Length: 509
Ligand code: HXC
Image (cartoon, rainbow, N blue to C red; front, top):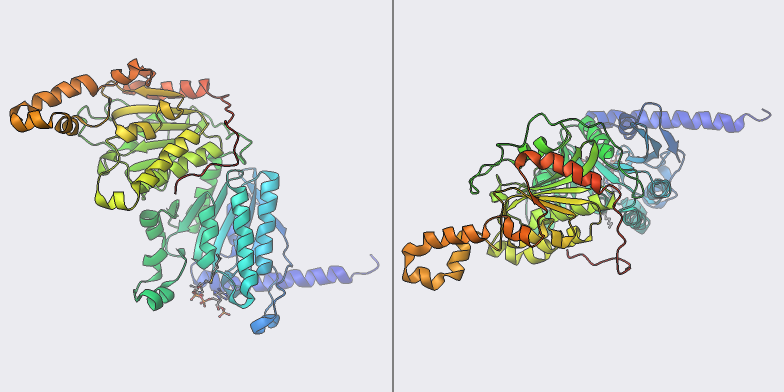
């Protein structure tokens, strides 16, 4: 080589990168956090990472920025593989200006998002940031806008996963919210639009960061977190698990896994008495392949359970009411949880199995005034819109709006099965006779029990619905797994064209 100067330059720059990362590592480790690069190498298959743009620097000069340079501008980006499958990644480096997002930092994230979309591969982002870089003003706000637009373009095309492993303040919270999954690491992750100091200034409320927007708050109160994990290593494992159920993009199917029989059977889980509760997790575990159920939002709206599972090795989405929490009634929060999950499954070609044991949407002034009508409507929207194979099993109660909304034939479900004790009716017998026989009961209260029994005999069974073709078969609990496997096999080549063609719908919010 005639001129070794450029190579010398590169060596020097690589050395500078190493020095700045060492400095960052010291501070991150002192805070109990991994560095941006450790997060990437911890997630990806060993030796698979190809870095992009390591020498990019910001071009800002205001407020002393010309004196502050950092190779890579506080974010590591690139691509690698997870269990052999291609993914794109970015990871914010809190060590440079608190991982704050300036224009160059944003451009690097946009580039990996573009590449992920173009190549049909999932994107995974590690978030650890103080939000918009104050010194770069509107340039950093613009950077967020560019990222948000790409998150929306990528939505329904490639899986998008955000791991929150530090503060995610201000506008930084919106990108994870636009992605498919937000995983928060307990003890180090916080997410809020305005932090405790601003909250105190504006409203006078005193609140600590953890209570305002820590993992527990977002995992159980707000529903912002899809999962909360005890450590960064657990978060990486959760990312690997999620990816294992999903295809790399909307044009592919999820990978087939080996089938494995569940370790228990479905008999004796559901009590005959419809007012007796049971844990729907037991039923899901007895239906799906051994150990395959992976729950999403396990502590939010616990009256409904959603998650991924496998049936005979095939990836599916499971939606189940939870009779042991609020008797499995539908609420605003459970409607949001279910509708978003069904849309995720539909976008990524995962068949949906619905297990229904629901007395209805919950009554009450609070729920009505907070808009259960528009939230509940989302469930109807999501099931009606979903063209993936759908199978519903009515276990016991199936009343009113919940009968229709939670995967009924009327919304396009392909197969609906019911157990012999299923009660498919407009409402429960007690409520129904109080309305229909109000005058008779007022005159002769002793007739009430007879009227309830008569109503039960007439309506609280699966055969009224079966006669009308709304239920395909009445099956025993022990048959649920094999019938569901057979149904999804039958539907495995299902293709539906959406008519009339439209730009997009307008889902209630
Ligand atoms: C520039 C920032 C920064 C920011 C932190 N830093 N946030 N620099 N812009 N947004 C810098 C700090 O000055 C400090 O630099 C270093 O990062 C570490 O920050 P510390 O405060 O020392 O760390 P810590 O005590 O852990 O607190 C972290 C923090 C806090 C909670 C994130 O820094 C903070 O509250 N930052 C501001 C958060 C915020 O309000 N962001 C919203 C921006 S507006 P030195 O040089 O001392 O190491 C926004 C709107 C976008 O995002 C809207 C889009 C729709």
